[in-house]
Amino acid sequence: MDIKGEAQIPAGLKTVWAGLNSTDVLLKSIPGCESIERVSENELQAKVMIKLGPVTARFSGKVSMTDVRPLEGYTLHFEGAGGAAGFAKGSADIHLQENGEETRLTYTAKASIGGKLGQLGSRLIEGSARKLSADFFAAFAQAVAPSSVSASVQTENGPADPSASSPASPSSAMRPGLVWLAVAAAAALVIATSIFGQ
Image (cartoon, rainbow, N blue to C red; front, top):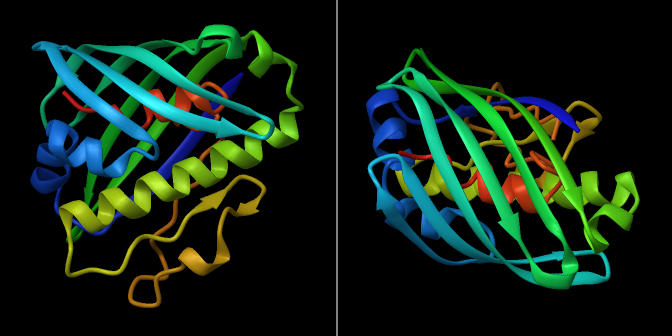
């Protein structure tokens, strides 16, 4: 599954970079995240409880970062296993760009899933991934810029959650092809899009 997306985050570049490097911010932002820890300078491990349609599972995931360019971006390599529920693995290129007082985050991801997750329909997976990504970016925006209204989220197929629109910043939008977005179909997206930081 190939995914492209973008998010307009209502915070400056340095603040967004610091948030992506903070396990505390990521723990608060990743839907269903139970734990996240830095294993090394460029590697994180996390446990995330995910519900996708009839499948609920606790995923243990590992994310490693390569080609780290401070304040610009990096490449993520991720994999997660949820026992009988299945697995997700892939990679994502993340780019940050200052956009006035906000930060534009773009990503391109490739992911694959297997097990029970692989048997779910693509519409169910994409819908769940859209919701997870919308929840992540809203929580992340609140964590790094608490005085702002959460960013609105839009996917290639339209708004993920129309109630997430930001009246203060109508241009704030995320177009996940579905990070961490269906970034590997839903499990991987949560493990990737959400754990991007190093």
